[in-house]
Length: 178
Image (tube, rainbow, N blue to C red; front, side):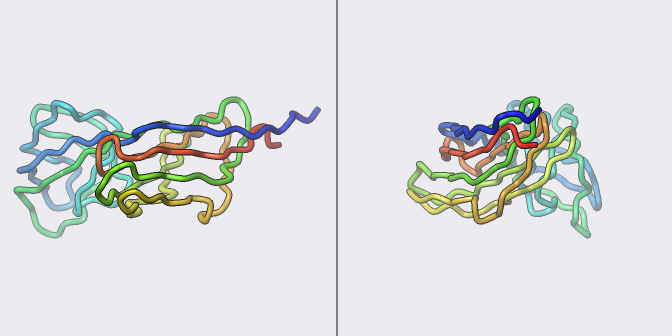
C-alpha cells in the first residue's frame, strides 16, 4: 500500500545563536579548547575557528574548556584564539517516512553579511549541505541549486548562522516518498 505524498513548507524565524569566547588555546591535533568561557556553550554547538574543519561539534563542556568531535588541524599550539560556538536550529524533522528536500531559501534580515551553514543530521552523524556560505545584507541564498536531498525517517535539517537571530529559513519538502 503506497502512502500519499504531500508537500509541506517548514519555516524558522530569526535563526542564529552565537557564543564567542576569546583567549582560547588549542594544542597540536587536539580535541580540546582550553582557557575559554563556557557559560553559554552547549553540547552540539558548531565550532567556528580556523583550526577545525567545518562541522566540528562540542561533545563535552568542562570548567573553562570544551572537548570537540574532531582533532584540530594546526601544526603548532595556538593561544589567544577567538572561537565562535554556533547553535544549530532544527528547521525540519522527517517523521516516520522518507522525505525529499526540494529546495529552500535563507534570507538575511540584518544590515551585514552573515555566513550560513545547513546540515543534514542522520542519527549521531551530520553532513554539511552548505558550509559558511556568505549571505549578503538584505539578500538571500537559494539552496535548491544543491540538488534534491533524500531524508530518511528521523533525519533533520539544521541551520546555523554566524550572527545571532539573522536568518529566516523557508524549506520546501515532499513527504511520504517511497
